[in-house]
Image (cartoon, rainbow, N blue to C red):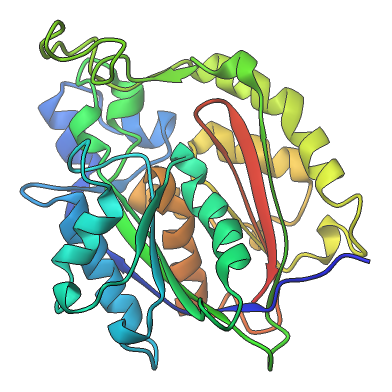
Length: 331
């Protein structure tokens, strides 16, 4: 019999920088009016002007704490779950903590988890393994993403798709609730390892020998190959995910997917073959916010009471690498 982990989401929060409409982007980059909505499915997204991952992450955490009965001193671990960062060193979670009001007054441990767009899903599963009600009672997972700095203005597909955002979730150990994490799984399909890529910035193309170049240091994705691989593997992944559980996809009350793209979400709905009302979709209003997409949509679902206590919720997505991951929990 599968053992469920007695954990509970007690609060969520978010932070969004300046809103940027598709009309602004289309006008600035000489795209036809309506190009973004037709191709990427995005009407509005948010881009930083002078913000940072650390600042946005801290604001999201402070918002989540204000929505809870907890104080910063009650937190036992902070996990930064994301693909973008302020500096190569130190780790992003330590920077976010330092940006918190009174953050320097508490020696809360901080760790980073980077599975790109699946970082929050992975971190939720990791947090459930830490939470024991003794050393770890309350953990904050925060995804703070700035993708706009790495976009190539000559690539309208990515230019119009991505947004910046931060979202935080407080997860606590509980023995007096039906809330629990049921299962978390991630598979990596290495045939797609370079379907999404930023070549420059790491040791392979180090800045000393490779100064900034728009082509080398901008985000690239092969959308056709990504969709082909997702179409090939997603159905099998979802089917196998439920094999050892006592319920199936039809028992799930709400599905919160990574907000990949207009075509990606349509493909996912077709593969899952569930009622569209079960799937949370905020792509048009926020774009693809990398790892922040899922916790931002989670906050929205809780705030709009689409996700209620006792509901069965599935977090599901894909990431660079190429990976598919899912976490099933009872809210």
